[in-house]
Amino acid sequence: MEISNRSTVTEFVLLGLSAHPKLEKTFFVLILLMYLVILLGNGVLILVTVSDSHLHTPMYVFLGNLSFLDICYTTSSVPLVLDGFLTPRKTIPFSACAVQMFLSFAMGATECVLLGMMAFDRYVAICNPLRYPMVMSKSAYVPMAVSSWVAGGANSLVQISLAVQLRFCGDNVINHFTCEILAVLKLACADISINVISMGVANVIFLGIPVLFILVSYIFILTTILRIPSAEGRRKAFSTCSAHLTVVVIFYGTILFMYAKPKSKDPLGADKQDVSDKLISLFYGVLTPMLNPIIYSLRNKDVKVAVKNLVSQKRFTP
Image 1 (cartoon, rainbow, N blue to C red):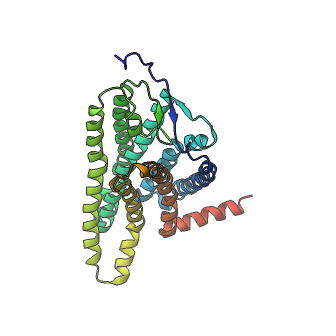
Image 2 (cartoon, rainbow, N blue to C red):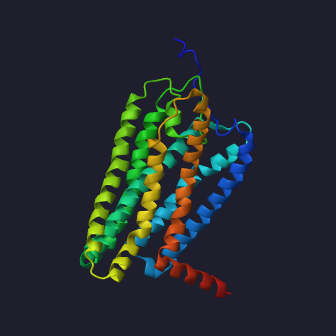
């Protein structure tokens, strides 16, 4: 009866770092710089993969998709975070919150699938090089890339549809920088068991299965590389997948660190841990997209050559 008398929530308040105003300006500058690096680095990668005909191969098509995805993922949340650092009362309408949740959730699920497909591409290239042109033909890798976006979007649509059907009343303060779906669900004045089950199933499909697929792929890849007789041959073979492996370790390693670390049982340390969890989540959202183009540029000879050619063309173009 008490709940039914409360007004329905039409907007949310993003708590962010409101309790630590001195940190807000510092993190505003830091996150802004990281966001600019993300836009520049991934923008350049997209440009070179589109403009250089030598990079019109499955691996670089996937890489271009990954760069575009990272731009979309950060753009769905970082501007909101930056605005929150400068705005005294950080409010967001319910509809805008739902859109932001949909975009960030869709991009995250899509990246998991895309990383799995990139692992399959490396598996075929190293373990079955003679069949690579046939297996990873254009009629195969284009639908693979498209299906990763469709799968991520469909999953997000299901999760957000279930979330917006919940009744929100009373408390409308989200203890986060953005409309993080778990933080939003905690505010619902209804049973969220279906949402929890649905997200659990989605985590198995979009986190568990890709991780298992990547793990199995790299077991076969490493087994094949170790069978190569020459050290130079092993080095060249491993260099073709080292950038992807580095990105996978950073991406999933950060997720495991966020969710597997133990929670403090000391009430006096709860606030510090809460701030720590939010900052880790914030930097996770910008660190991986920022590192991806750097990793692929430093560890990939073809990309470095394409970037140099692009710079040379711009320099000598009147």
